[in-house]
Each structure stands twice: as structure tokens, then as C-alpha cells.
Length: 114
Length: 114
Image 1 (tube, rainbow over the protein chains, first blue to last red):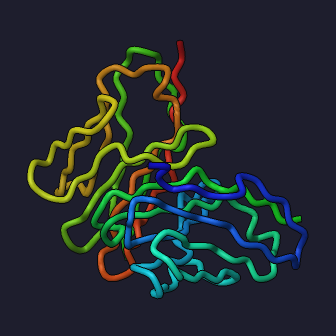
Image 2: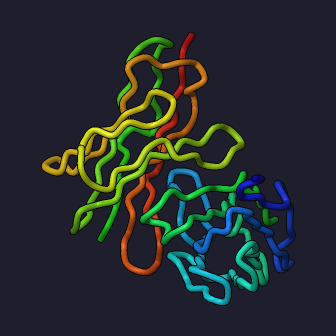
């Protein structure tokens, strides 16, 4: 199993540009989520999904969109990038709701918005 | 509101010395508690978790943690630190409900001196 994979590993954007961060898992997990990690703030939940076709907002959803058309994939879209979105983004998956089970994290995408 | 506090931002220990990383949480019900480790440039890996039962939990890589309800703490310990333990450590509590959210502490960076 590859586990949770994320692409790209690094990305630099200009303010106003859009892009999609990709996340895929091969463990047949129902629950997937996106976190952002900022210095001194731990990880904060952006969006999550409890299964294909079902998504919902987390703690810091503004400026991000998600969709879940398959069990395996959970892309995160930045609609119009802002410098405040400079961060490291982690995708995670688990077989049950994230708080009730081990979450498996991808290696992260480091995003810089100029 | 639920929260997690890791009082120590940075800790340095000598190789072979014992280690204790502190974690305090605020949560109304019985918490689901986790410790994750993040090596440089990597995603997060679960060290151990507490859901119920025995308050002393064993994890991977020789780590253990003790849940103390009276002190709202879930401190991580290791009797003898290895240089490879240098990493950032996150304590987290499961938020419950339908969000699946984990609430993370700010993280503690561990440096190991030879």
C-alpha cells in the first residue's frame, strides 16, 4: 500500500492564482480530511469528508473548496490564492470518523503564496 | 471549548536520558487522546492513543503515555532517548461529534544532544 499520497510536494503561487492540491489513499478509508499547519498553531482542520459525495467544513474553510467523487481521492482547491494561505497542507484518512480512529497522514504540500 | 496545550515549545535532552513531554487538555467528556510524531519534512505518524481502560498506554518506538483525568493531562514518556527521536511531537484530542476533527496542540520540538 502506498498509504496517503499528496502532490505536489512544493508549490509557489502568485496572489489570485488558483490551484488544486491532490490527495489519494489506497486503504479504502471512508473518512478523509485536510489540515493546514502553521508555526506555533499545530494543525487546523480545513474540510473533511465522511464518504464519497459527502463533504463538510472544518475550522478554517474560507478560501478552500473540496469534493469527493471517489473513495480514493479528496482534492483541495484554492480558488484565489492569498498570502495568508502560505502553509503546509496535510491530507489524512481513517477508517472511521477521524477522532475515533488512527489517522494516516500524507507527506504534506508546502505552499507559498507571493 | 476543547483545547490542547503543550507547555514546552522546545526541549533538548541528551541521548540516553529520559524524556517527558507534557500535554494538558480541556474537554467536557471522556477524551480520546493521541500523540503524533512528525519527523522533518514528513507527515505525522501515530505514536499511541488512549480511548478508555488502562490509563498507561504503550506505543511504538518505546514511548508510553499516562492519562490522568484529575490533572487533565496525557504526558508522553520515554525512558531512554535515541538520536532518531529528534522530531516534533503533537498531542491531540478527538473533538467528537460528526466533524471527525482532531484538536492539536502547538507541538513540542525535541532536540537530542549526542
